[in-house]
Length: 219
Image (cartoon, rainbow, N blue to C red):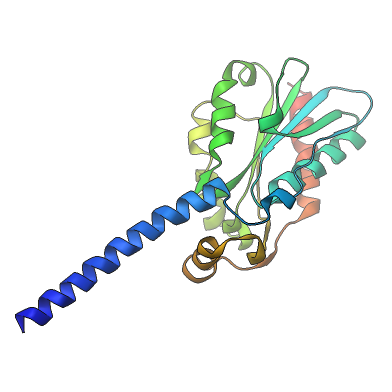
């Protein structure tokens, strides 16, 4: 009997350790974007508008939704009388030419992207002297409820300790299991149970972009 109990305890401990290891791997995989075919994803660099105040829309994306939103924001502001430059924040070299900043990030494993956090911290003197708005994409908002809105707002807690954004945008994106590797897909589909589908609301993104620009223009 004692032997059976010891074996059962050993199996239980093995399951606990396996679960802990899987959770760590899942967090690393999702935050670093270790997905097959990621090089084929579209991460745009573009410019919209010919005259007006200059806006930088810089983003940290993984599966493409945050980058797509940046392009939508750029197009919207270009049409609204701004000069809007869209680029991956890893490609941003000089901030001095811009009057307004809109910074976007994906959320993975309950956290914003590490390069987003690093970009904000590295450029705080600029961001604290000019208008800045921030937005994020997370599948938490695939079900847009007050509870999930509150949870999504918490993802910006660390950033908001450093700067005071003029506006904040919270959006759901698209989940395509085919863009995830085996570990990430299993965790997302079976454990976290994130639904697959298109939850992006383009008109809401456009509306927020115009509202954010209006706030900025008054500063």
